[in-house]
Image (tube, rainbow, N blue to C red; front, side, top):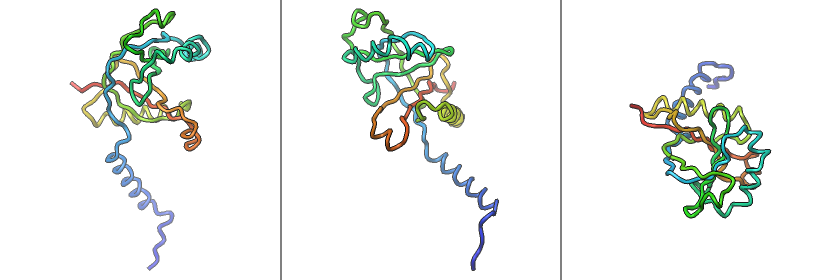
Amino acid sequence: MNVNYSDNPSIENRSMEVTEKLDKKIPDIMIIRIQKFRAVTSGLLTFEELFSGDFESWQEAHNHLFKPVIFDCPDFLCEKDGKVQWIWAVKDEVSETDTYPYKIINYPGGLYAVAVSIDGDSESHDKVMKKIEKWLENTNFTIDSEREYMGNMIYVDSEIEKGLGYNQMNLYVPVKLRK
């Protein structure tokens, strides 16, 4: 018996239901803990000021001061009040004399919900953030508004970029247990 399933909305709807159920069983968001760390900061700037100013060239000349925090990566871009600050974890022996004219801060670390986005693609970024927020609704976590959202590119690698066609951007949403 041959049955034509094309243009059958009930089959299509059932397929979507199964896909949604599978998506819920296969998490693509994880909760991680980042330990407290000392970091040099660019200070709060607009995105344009950060990448057209002196901090990026200063950072490139001072790579020997940095240490990895997660995935062999020392840096995060944090967003606060419509501005950003770039923070780079520094080795324990580094002082503000070494980082002049930039200050060292104590970054609090904490729990974060993490997912991957496409670097430089605001549509991808927005979709991933909405997905994290929706996912959190079904957990015992909630967004921690006392800390900043962060992002970083853990692997800036030409082979990975060539294979995917883009650089990956990890997005970190600060979370805490619901009360």
